[in-house]
Length: 588
Ligand SMILES: [Zn+2]
Image 1 (tube, protein in one colour):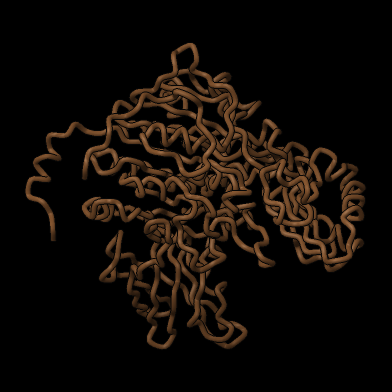
Image 2 (cartoon, helix red, strand yellow):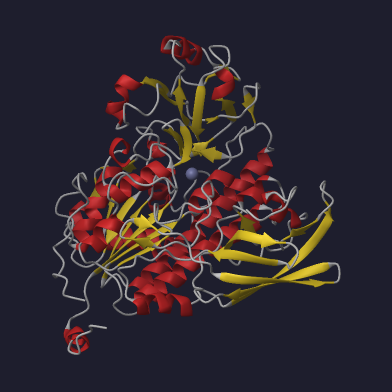
């Protein structure tokens, strides 16, 4: 290997460089943050926290040490994939191409979390400029296999291309009486924990007359299963159903994606989730993460909570595990000089809000349940804040520039409206695709958009207009919203409180899956996210600690100014003069 002998000595003399961390905190509303800093509570009607505990939390510490924006306006639709893509590229959806969490591309329904980005994201721009880059579940770095999976499976971003995950574990199934034990041993190319043992439960024979295997509570096993036999669909290996009374803590180890399973010898191959690390990293850094056993744990188990298998306490505990892993990652990152830019994505706050921000007067919940859920949300947001403080401690604000940005806020939802069913009366061939409070409508030739507009304008559910406080926009006005003219024939956003779905059903309304959601018009203050920045060389004077409203397209440039790198092509400028230029990066 052509490694110069003088290189290490030179490296030792160099002072530690300023490093930058972008924390993408999904779903933290500007209204919640502002209320927390002003009234010491995230939600109205909750008992205020003590001044000391607010000051010791991560959010107040960032705000006190640096600057915060009054709000961070999202792009439309105000959903996660679109806004994360906007944060990472600095451009509108018309250019980065992630139009929603789900949308049609060339006639096919695609997943916004796994579609390739049409513009250069930060995690690609940084290594191109010779900067060492670490990503943790950042949008676009996760692999797209299995394609519809929401799992953050292990994947490695290589110069912008997303490589396939490496097999991480060899698995042996050892029957044990009526039950079975699954041993996952690290394969040759494994990352993360060397061994995981899962107790498996054998269920009754299924329709095909086969015994199926059920994972223990809390372990997640989903995804493509090409070698499964007839009748052994992916549902066979779902673990959520093993918590009937909600008293057992889910034992979430990690996301595990089954690749193949041969029931005869009982052998299977799995991919275990982990950090996505840019190949620009030094090898030693990857090994450090391995030694720390850093495997990203599963997201909050929304599925089990929605089906009443776990209560809100367990749901919150599961979700906080993600933050705990982020704290562990920050501790690993904080030691030594191993990166220039790290991008950490944390999804838990979004999950907490979706499941617990119950609206007063929601039909299927008693007012006691609504109050209980909201109190749980307040509690868990405070726990998130404490963990953010641990992350800041680990990163050390004296030598790390931190930008914390969220992608949207949310509001309680009361009705789920099938956009598809609503348009049946216009033409049954109309295709729709929806995510949260927004959707795209694709018309077959010969169908007049005016008929759709009329139908939607008249659409009422429970005495309320579904679109009066939303909008129905024709393609020729998409450019105004930053959407490409080719996206669809119509873009729709419902009034707050309505979720749109594309259920294949004739019934117009249903109970919404979530307690709260987003996707509504971006001007709505409740849809706005947060922007906080702190660290060495922050220029804003103390009189300007609170910046005016910022826009999601400005985050990328703000991060680039912190790192001292060229922003991605076409990125909108950030807030001017936020950072002093960092010392020029030396060779590495
Ligand atoms: Zn969300």
